[in-house]
Length: 159
Image 1 (cartoon, helix red, strand yellow):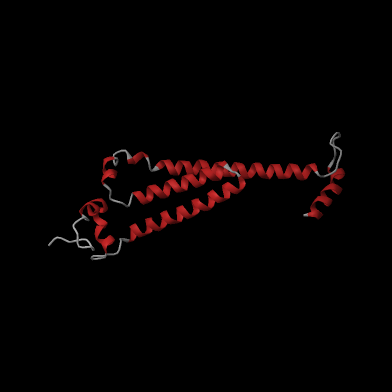
Image 2 (cartoon, one colour):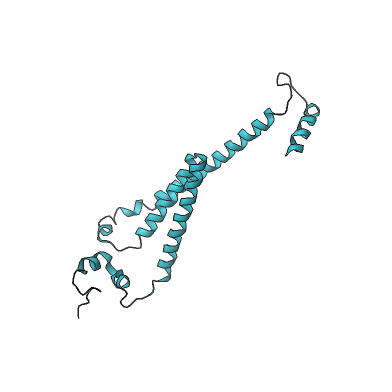
């Protein structure tokens, strides 16, 4: 017995062909739960998209290339993780080349993490240089630790 679409027409054959094994779940017929590993990967992809969105907002506020790269790599990883769960006909054609795609977001993520660490260290050095420039000491002569102690005490009392 052929199943029909909810509207009674036979136009759903192409949709079922496109949706593949998940066509029954779309129309609510014989709804079976997804296997636990698929549920886990779907939730992980959703978490990656959420984190990517927040990193992108943070990058936009700070005008940071490192955080934009981090957001892009997480979004790419989420897309590949989500696309791996679908059984689409065009994915079968590129399946032989898909093996090299999986390491790309992970390498981008590693590069972005190094960029973020470098940017944070650079910002810390700039803040320390700014704090040191406000000590109010004579930069033309070499000072000993005892000469710098009053300036440091004033600096730490402000913070």
